[in-house]
Length: 614
Image (cartoon, rainbow, N blue to C red):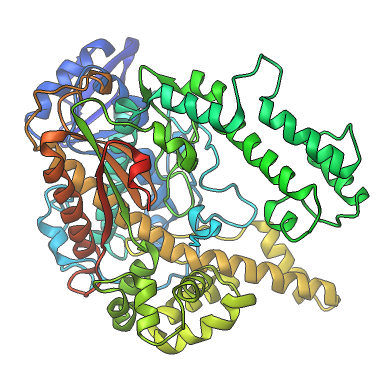
């Protein structure tokens, strides 16, 4: 059963069976919606709505959870941008509705060229969460963790995935419009190149929409006292309004003295850059990596000042006052907020929690945190995508980087990490450029896949993830640059510029196919885990600050690309940890079938997030 929720005349809400929309199940006042949904949820429907962020918070506030939904905003962004639906969209007479433009990363993409993705496991057919009863029964289609890996891959010139995203809430959409758009999306999926893969992606993305709202509703347990102690230890006592903390003031004096410029404003990049150059420190920026290349007495205190300034602005006392309420951190997640499908946030900076404040993430009394981090997720996904048995074998039962060393490809673990990251992010110089050719000889299928993806991007084409999310086409300015280079009167500068921007876009598409497919794995992992957790019995030790929907049951409280945290009653923590590991393994089977690539976790049951590190 599929039940659409949308607005009705006179400010009311309508609930209709998608298969019989002319006879509404209910037309009610907004405050009556939680009770109506709770009653109908017993039939295990799939709820169809414009945007989970528009409808689901009120349900959770009333203690009502739903098992599954179809989020039209997120689904629309996928089907409108996928190379797998190009022909279907061209043949469909109904245009997309204007309200769908609120979807994150929505782009109208035509003339797609896709990198062939790996097969979707036939096991998807029988998975309750990812049901395919709406379609014909055809067979399923046959760091240092570097800063680049930590950030979401986005088109050159666009904002990063950890940047605060704009609000994408769809406004009030009538129930008739909801039904019409849902049917349009189903037509596009059914007529797509790989209907089962696309339906799995939409189901996983919609599950992510529910999880994003639930993470905000439950909140991440946060001990304000611990956080304040961290700030005092790092910055000194809380300063008066308008003043800087004592340690920052002392460091600023030290920097100014070393530069012999007593009035320089260290918080102004322009002033600081000018002062550094006047002191004989020839730098192009004030970035820490460039500053570290110079030997000058101002450098160390300046780096220390910048580190403390970042802590103060991102997670200082003002942040505490704004974001920590009743012992919980409730950021506003934006599922699908980046080009690759990775999440963003529109407030709170949840995707950039520094290590020194993680000690404040503390479980409630009688509860535990189950912290899980998928080890080397993207290289393992690359092995599965390319069906590279050599790379999968190097990762089996061991640290992947150590496995590459043991295979004789490189000499050290650090070299293996640099080489893998260089291969996935298109590095051509330095250690990466020197080591990547070794990977190409050892793992030719994996390296050929990312090389092919880069070549498609350099030609201005699209690449597509395992399940069907496609990269955006280059903007008009990119194509204009290429056209200028082809003009008979083009200069050498025009040609160099065209080659440069082509390579830049190729680096984007090179990693898009890997990072986007890894995001799909993470969504399936969380979706399966959410279902497992909901089946566990309630605890007699409540956590009331988690809200009425989660006060007595284990629940997800944090997600960061390849890492999750579950807040769980202590008496079932081991069972939850086992479920987390089981769901990681099942996600791999779901996406890559019987291909022998494993997805091990760094897993810990702790009282504080900080205790899980290392």
